[in-house]
Image (cartoon, rainbow, N blue to C red; front, side, top):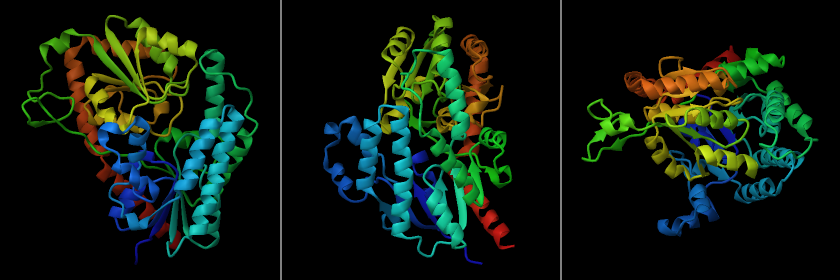
Length: 428
């Protein structure tokens, strides 16, 4: 039996293009549609800019290049991508932001269908930019796969409303989102058009179940990332985050615990809880938050009084922040399965996170799982790591071992196995 070939349609560089990459390597990719690609069309000219002269914006654009995918199989709608970016930047209200997402989802689907599904027997899309593709493919008898990359919008909206009420003044009050119900209706219509819904974590499945959604279509497929490596001062290769002799330098033991958070600074990622932890652990730990800042100036000022904010940084510069840290903290309230937690494990960092983060971390093994919004539990776990070096060392080793189970290669096996299994089921 021939293997099903897939069209992948993806806005953005999600997981550094992991899905088209693994399908390409498995010879299952017919074509990859995306909104912007640095190796197609005019963006290729950006490579001519000397590295020393590239601003962060250009570096981020150059990161938009799918490694391991044959450029001949890539179709990039660069003009659309530029317009989508313009609309997102100019949107100043919740309604305006949702309008840009709705426009992009519909327009992207139109462009993909105009480009054609060719001989592909299946389509693989991502929520909010999938509906029309899934509906057409389903009518034509093709296999339809949807990845729900985050808990449903209806759940996310409820969580964020509760947070906004608890932390007034953190994010700009911009009024009601008049298009939220339209977005929710589109997302839930995609579930109906999909044969299979891939979810990065059980948290996503449980959220769909909470809404009465089609959990019988859901399959949990945890993610995977490329494991990092670096060389010591003597040039020899060693596991990231773990010294060659298994011991941390004596001066490192004496300094405060270094706590890293990576992700947009805002309510969804639990930033107020990071601030409170930094206050309570002053003198015992230092905190750094890496990511775009999506809070008011007043909230930003409060954060800067107690921790370091870097703002958004190019993908190529993230590694140095992981190498700085002793432990990774992500008290997120709503995710799919946050890839930064996988990356942190790869750097040998114990992870402290919530169940809502969708992490593969096991409580007490590679880190700690704390209840969402429970800052006291978070502080207690971080304090334990600050005071117990032997535990910190063991968790660092366990973290790296856990990361070996969630490499890009392992993710490829899970994705391909799931798709082929679903294909066989649809034929039986």
